[in-house]
Length: 362
Image 1 (tube, one colour):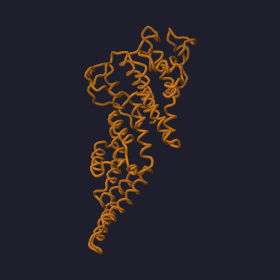
Image 2 (cartoon, helix red, strand yellow; image 1 turned 60 degrees about the vertical axis):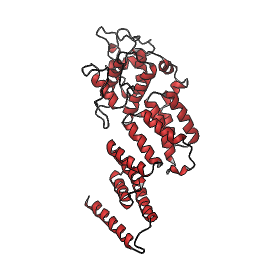
Image 3 (cartoon, rainbow, N blue to C red; image 1 turned 90 degrees about the horizontal axis):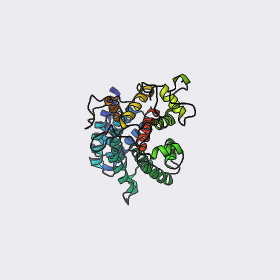
Image 4 (cartoon, rainbow, N blue to C red; image 1 turned 120 degrees about the horizontal axis):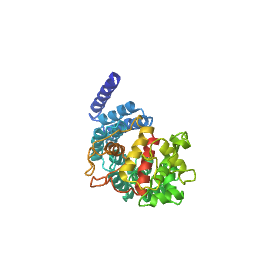
């Protein structure tokens, strides 16, 4: 800290010295060049995830030229890395006030919306970046900025369960950037959803399109993505009375009931054909988190989110709060959850896949 302090003082002294030389003032473009150099150093350290060093150089850039918008964009990115969302928003708003068309700042602004679960707002901002007719393509300072915009749109549409838009934007982006490792990784990550929409897995596609889904179908979708988390150590003694090896979703039901993620009813039956409600799936996913990610960094155990139709003494209240806090569920604009409605295949696949992304990335 002491070294950093004296380095900042040194930079200020040097700046004052330059200002007093020659004609008595240093050209504005020279100050801008110095700030640009410090900013680029900060970017290199940020790419290496050395946040303290990156912050130091971004601060230097801002000290050299207080009107240099990228300096505040860099500082905002660091705040986001540290989960300081309010600070990040303050800094990025300052950056955009200085340079409204600075693409990296627009991307950070979208990141902030996503961090807060405002996916539709983020999509609107990002689509504006992509669809605006620009005479000056240089607004995208780095080659990967437009590519990142596509990636964020795809992930945001995924979070809202709009899979047709996911496929459309992914295809468009890959056509434009066929060599993109980011987009190729995303394509690989979304292979189950893509196959569901594009006639891949018949079981998954059929479930995806249904207005209501059953307990056995729910077990199948969870097992598709989470099966590798669980050891195959349940035996036939654990089987519900109404399940046998010839059942279509036998493996999924055996594992999920054996681990009590989808426990049997008191009479020992699983009731595979029973349709499932929204509140019930919330409890199931909450149990899944307890076995796979509850102690891992970055996982939020709850939030204070008012739902007009969910009282605090509801048996699923804590579970719902956890899913909202981790952006598994995005409430409707009326802030109602509708716990007693049957869950559709699209909603169920969306919630389960969002859960998989959260847990698998931890």
